[in-house]
Length: 99
Image (cartoon, rainbow, N blue to C red; front, top):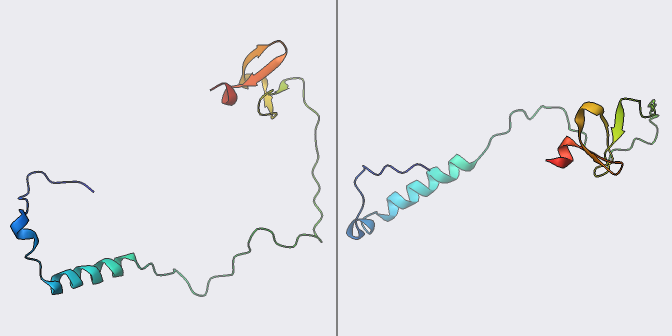
């Protein structure tokens, strides 16, 4: 929160002057500001991760590493040659791992 250094400051004598009613009113306002209303109670249910996918069949075509790609020796991901940061003793390192 920003502080206005030009605003008059309360001295120790002023701190005890707040009444109980004022403090309770501030507390009520603060509590109501915390409440967040949901957008739609009629929204569709959200499917959580870990749902039963046993009847689903996935088909993914896996390609072998291409001539213009390399496998990083640190993260073991396949990258394009443009992502090569360094190569020493046959150990290739991508830009992400070198950073």
